[in-house]
Image (cartoon, rainbow, N blue to C red; front, side, top):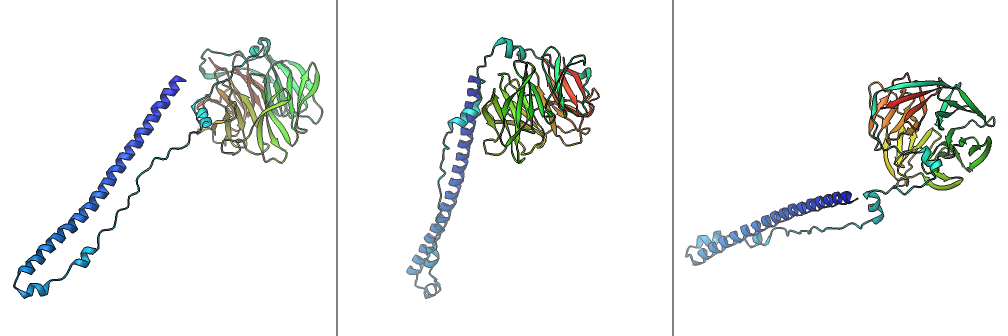
Length: 401
């Protein structure tokens, strides 16, 4: 913080010196204008003196011709140069917005505490620096049996939950063996799945506007919405639930943070009152980065939209130019790893975009025979799980050293 303060002081000094330079330039310009005006008056004054001398010579002369030829110049001298009106420059200080200044200076992440057996075991911080592999490696391919595979989420111990456009949610181990199947009501094809800090399964049902929790084999209603439809979800490091949703008239979208069933915060507009997300029912996958940023892959806007934990817009990523990736960027799945890198699926271009925490493009994952990547997640070792939408496969990919 002290270094940031020193940098701000330097920047303020630069601004002040720049303004002082502007004042010096204004002063020189003002002096030039006044000097020009003074020169005009001196010229008239000189002409008046010359005329007075001529009149004096005529007066003392005995020759009548000079008097007859003389023409008065009083009218000419009465036309003085226009008066120069100068408006002096004024410094108008802007009022200091302390709250905005505080936000611009930086942010302090809040103290986060959690029971070790729950949150810490799931979100153990990784302080080691891990570089990207030159060539990502395909570790395993899991055949799920879905015709339209949308979502994958990591449980623990190399187990994953998967879902598609059916009423079945399936659990597989790392070897592709089916371990468990949960059947929802026939009309409840889940729009997304997640695992909470207690390792209980959560799934959202867009058809009735609800989020359900499966605990000890029993399904219970966790959240019920009015006028909104839930789509994608993620569980944060603090155990909260982030849910993307759209209005039933398809005109608005927002992110809501829940603690259990209690709504804590809504993220919908930027500081200028403009919508952060496209107002439609297009897919909006969501994840929380390790720095607590909230990252939304807004396919309808063709952008990854990242806000801080208070909902303030940090940056937008709208794709990376490539001669080989020539279809529009419409991100679907999104996840983050231990290095605060963000990974988002580009289904139509058959690749994964890897970004740093500030939205800078790092590289693609476009090998491993990826076809139509959709939902994403990473495990505790930063292995990437990728849903292939049409093939119904989950591919496990190693992309870090």
